[in-house]
Structures are given as structure tokens and as C-alpha cells.
Length: 316
Image (cartoon, rainbow, N blue to C red; front, side, top):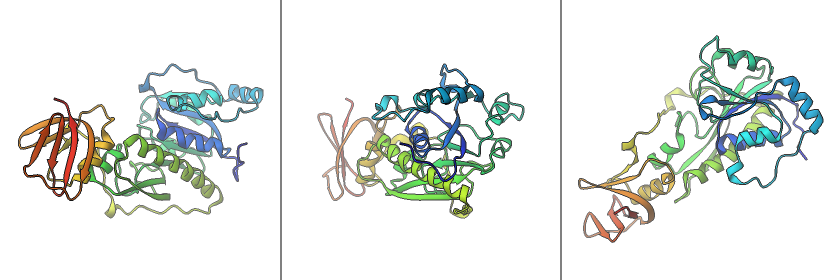
């Protein structure tokens, strides 16, 4: 059974493929909020049918609102599958910056109480942000105002952060700059992969989003302005950002390699003018010492870091 929210808000949800959109949307549906439309970028090349609000109402009446699917395989945990299962219209949009965009009138028609965003690549124009009476809210995987930008998890690993978190904030004309509604901190354990960290943050973010909407509707949560003096911002990483050098600690090298190994960009280890392509992080000894800067035993590379020793398997 779905829990009934304090107020049956009508929402439009913006997201993409991937768990950071899926889990917040799932949380909204499980809480009983009425998601009237799901918006995705057209760049994902999906073949979908756009369902009008009137047709949607007839579909829901006929199907009596199906329960959420249980034990959905990870490969199917995407918002397209969830939209189909729940008979929610799925809209594909191009850039929304053009005030005359053909997509904006379609979004107007849903008259949402709030717009919810989780991992959407386009900036929402002011005209769109002003549509819902309660405003537009975004789920961001960092402790804003720290780590603003499109790829915060990468920079968690690159900086060697011990903690990260999730922020739900009101959206304004900037990127990740709007007032904060709720925020929770989370430790980054040694050896965690980016997908595992993202899933934990996505689930945490979904719970915060549900609480934020309830707080907005009852005015029990007051948005807090971000301190721009404390802000950090990062863009997308480039290939040189995927290079491990021994000037950093062994713990950092191990966590960076474990975290980002699943990315399509190769991770390289650079020592004394040589570069090795990492296949797998093996372990690290925070207090270890090598007699030389590095040692290669078969495909096992040991690197003297500052401090400690990092070991990884490399491509020969």
C-alpha cells in the first residue's frame, strides 16, 4: 500500500536514465504523490509515446493505479520502465532555454504544484521554474554549496573526500545555487565504487525529496540561502583528471581507482615519466614503504606514495 502524503500534490518530474533519477521518482510514487508527467532529454534517443493528461486520467481510472513493481532487476530500474508501469506520460524535450520552445506549452498543461528534478542535464528557464506554486526543487549529490556542478561524485573521489551527502534545494536561475531545503551527510567508505555510492545517495535523496515536499506544502521547512563564500564548483573531468601520481597518499589512490574503475575513460598511473593503464585496484598499506619508487611483479604494480604503498593490476 502507498502512504498518503499530507497533501496530494501534483508533480512533474525531470530526470534521465540511471539510479539517481530512478530512486527519487520511486520515492515520490511510494509516498503517494501524483506524478503527472516525466520529462527526459531527447538526446537519449528513446522511442516513446507522449500521453495527454486527459488520456492519462482514463488510463489510471481503468487500471486503478497499479502498485509499484517489487524486486525490479537493476537493468530495468529506470524511469522509462517506471513511467510505463504506472501509466505516466513520458515527454522528451530538447533544450528548454528558448522562450518559444514548443516543449514549454506541453509542460504548462500539467499545472504542477511542484517540479522535481534529479539528474537532468538542461537548465530550466525562469519561465518554467515559475509555473508550480510551491516552486521547483532539485536533488543534488553533494553538500551544497560545496561541489556544485554536473559530476560531483567524480570530484568526491578526485579530492579524496571522506564525506559527501545529498542536498534538496529550491531551483533558481543558476546551477545548484538555490536555497537549501534539506541536507544529509554520508561517509564515503574505503573501496566503494561510484555506482554503489550513487545508489546510496539516490535512495537518501529520494527520502529527502519526499520530506522536502511535505515541508514546503505545510511551510514547516524554510529554505536557507546558500553561502556563496563557501561554494566550490567543478565542470566535467578531462582525461588528465584520471591520472594517479605517487605524490598523493596510497589511500587516495586506492579509493580513486576503486571508485572510478567502471567509467569508460581509462585510469592511468604515472610514475617517473611512465604511464601504466590500471585494470584493478588490489589494496593499499597506509604505512607501507618500498625500497624504490615502484616495483612491477608480473602485472602487479606497487607504487610508493606519500605516504603508503598502493598496489594495482595493470595492462601489460
